[in-house]
Each structure stands twice: as C-alpha cells, then as structure tokens.
Length: 277
Image 1: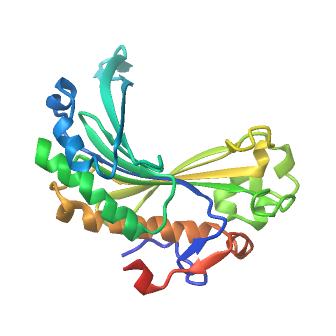
Image 2: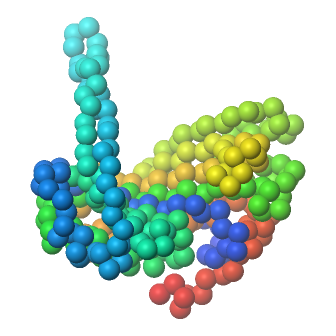
Image 3: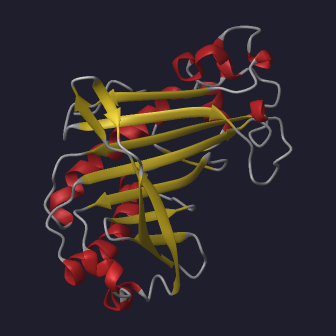
C-alpha cells in the first residue's frame, strides 16, 4: 500500500522541463574485504560492455561511537575509515556504477522511466552476486534529487507558495516572507507502511551549475531518499518488491508536493501503461 501523499489529478508523466537531476539506488551489504584487497577485474568484465570507463578514488568516512557511562553518554574519538570506491561509467557519462567493500550503487543523470532504471540495475547486481556473493543486504535505498529552477521553468517572480506545497516550503510559504529568507534547510523523516521503510526529505535553496551567480531563492532543491534497514536476501527477487514500493511512494510524493501551476510549467506528457511495462 502506498503512503498518503497521492494526487490522482496529476498523472504519471514525462516532463519536457524535468526537474530531476539525479537518481541513485544503493544496496549495502556486510563488508567484503576482497573488494579492497584486489582490483574488481571479474566484476568489470561482466558489466564492461555497458560501462567501459573506469576510475577509482579513496572514500573517507568518519565513524563516531557513543558509549553510555554512569556520567552519561560520551563520544569516543572519531575513527577515520578509508575504502576504495570503484567507479564504472557508461560511454556517454550519464550512467554510473559504484562498488566499494560495503555497497553497490547505480546512478544516472538521464532518468527516463522507473522500469528502465530498474532493469539496468540487475546487471551490476548479478555481477556482484557472481563475483562476491554477499550474505545479504543491510540497507536498500532509492534517492531522487529534484531541482526546481523558476527561471528555467518560465516562472521567475512567481512566489514559491504558488508552486510547492506549503509543508515543503516551511517559512518560505509565509506571505511577504520569501524575499527575506536567505537560506532554508529542512530535514524530515516519514515512516512508511511497508518494508520498515523510511522517507528522508531534505529541502533547501540552491544554485544550478549552469548559472552559479543566479539568486539562491530562484532554485529550490528537494532531495528524497527512501530506505529500509531490513535485511534482504541477495538477488533480484529479494529487493524488487521493496524498490517498486519505494518508487511508488517517491513518485506519489513528487506529484503531491507540486501545485497544478508548477506541474503544468514542467510540460508533462502522460506515460501510458504500455510505455511503462
């Protein structure tokens, strides 16, 4: 069952002025030391036809432990962790697979439909299973980053409260308050009704790479990350239902949070069922 954020008046659509800038699916698993020990040559061979470009970098993370004592909760010194991040990219640079000792991720900047994205996911998932056989997934996540640019949408000067739901805007929805707000950063987590899933929503003003000098207030960013910390069996069958559920909720939320004015400005074209299958 999908969550309450749903607006049937706005059908599932392609957008000529699509705000979506990145989609990422990340699957975490218990650490596999062999991925750091040697180059993932066998993994590359299984996906190289679709992802011929290779690069790597060191991913640094700080882990902070909290310990309960009679005097209260204290923090232990941060532990610096380093992991090799192997990056495999499509020839056009628009699709990317990332592999580390603890996660596999697929991302794209040219999202078309969920069905296409999901079908592309199974190639690196199958390669991961064949080469490393993880025990199970410890986290399944699906993230959408939308960048609403009033200039690009032809809506310059239109108040954000006429474009986005007031619960998304927070203080920026208050009449005559928008121009006085220099920054806004909201963080919300919503519990969903299946798969022990959570939806994490981060919103803020921002600039676009194409026009960094543009006023921040002209661009509103909505970063939606739906995830579950439940253990899932490895393979397509183990996570497909969960990912479909996450997509449905993310799509419903995306349609709910925009007004009809903004929806129309994105120039939607309804996706027929036969196109989605």
